[in-house]
Image (cartoon, rainbow, N blue to C red; front, side, top):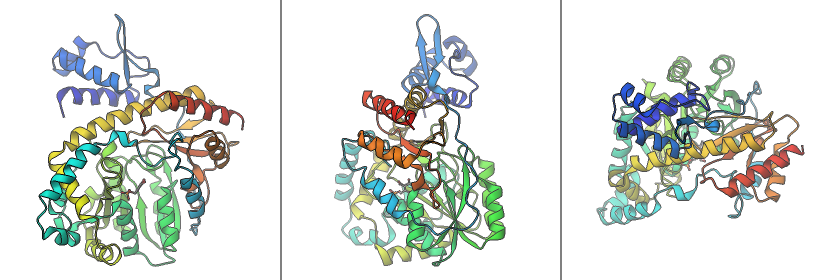
Length: 469
Ligand SMILES: Cc1ncc(COP(=O)(O)O)c(C=O)c1O
């Protein structure tokens, strides 16, 4: 990371934490240059970057100021306590009816699960596909199906090392996206009828996997900033024979919550005491806005209890369907299950990603992507503050590309979904994120697409629909 980028990240963190409030004057270039021990041109570069990210603005002859929308304008959601009893899951029909309606390319994609394809280096990836295949040894076309592409495994292990996880190569199983890895992990440690602790709200595919495998959900509430309620989890683990936990410790989908390192360590100790395995879904790990990649719970794992699942789908190559799991003590069994179900992820896709990670400028791409997403988050928050009812609540995650809105009780988000769709706007209504159809007045909106007049207009339209409830 360059010096000006580090300085920009430090100032962005001060803005996010509220130390530099909206409207506040950012230290002058001369002052910042002296206090940070960098040249004035480095400070200017940092300020230009923060301007690009939509966090500060220059006022003629007055200096730089924090933009009004740079911090929260609407308050944070309040997540009430979840269903205490284990519940059968039955959401698939609802999820499919919502997903089915998102297919029209002319719809404003606030309901989408992906960022804009324009944010991914698709042309560079295509070159890596050609290089990767040209350099592939003939025997690798078969050998890489079982073992995975060795260079891809090495590159993934290096990224683990950078965030504090020393991974024995044998632990890594490459999969068809993270979703296959998550499915296999769960199959590895449960039988039909078992209880699994999940988040409330949870990523809807989590619910569908539980439904398919005939597992029961024990919903643990998630705080929009701090993550799962550890006390509730501890009580559930004491009272109930929970066989596994499936949690996102960073940039949780849909709330965007990230647990502190201390809380991640405490979660690990709790699970270790009860010997309950953790399936850690970390597919948004690379999309953090701060200076450093968040540490996964996996980094505290001493005895292979954590199965850590990652993916390139959200940050580099959607559609390539390459993910992985660092499977801990379950790695061999997960690998066998994969052989029995899909055999292998595509060898050409693995070769392309291996080449890209080595030569394609992945970290540069990620920095650009994070900055674009951060600016777009600011734009959506500002638009929500302008157009949505004043008693709306919204998350402000430190990464990813989703905002979770909690509307006044009178709003029915399934009805809102239908009304918005009729106006050409999609969104993800709250009940698809719950085993027990809660969050009826909530919705997840995607800000992963470049912000333009159409986005602004769509927010205004949603605001009008909301006002009519
Ligand atoms: C939280 C979460 N986990 C897993 C996945 C699936 O990832 P992949 O596309 O790599 O299978 C998604 C995709 O939407 C997700 O949001």
